[in-house]
Length: 239
Image (cartoon, rainbow, N blue to C red):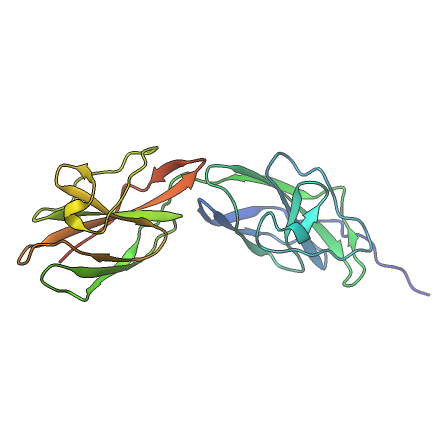
């Protein structure tokens, strides 16, 4: 004789947010006593759908993937015996609701639907990691190339100033335009010019004066509903 497998009795007992930025989260849970667990996330409120027994679902680490939908607006972002998951595709400043369903079985799964582990996270509005590793190349009398490693914002602005360090600080909610031609670039403060605004890590600056030292500050930002939120601890460099 044999006994068919049943649902696990214990799900995760806690969680740790290992990394949180405006568009993603890395989370670790203490595993339950099942063969694995299904992670479900919802933005609009608490999870309002649950997995059904004897089914295997598709899960992807990107929130909002159509093929990983459970019910109307719940999304499955991780499964199997993973105790750690990185979720991307999130929105700055928003709260997300999680429910983790422990299960037994491999091809035909039986879920503990009565006691899922539930928690919420709220993402920050502003980035918390500045750009890094600035380097100059293609240096000529009136131009240069500035390259850097982006931080964890959705984009960044670069402010340049001749002869003195950049002291201007971008203001949350303010939209700045940019021009990589230094003499034509708009001022964020007198003599401090926005020469770059985009999501990359490279800018070719022209319109410079020979024999002049130029200072640069790189400010990360996130964009939400048309508003910009800046990290006011920039990477600074000079050439």
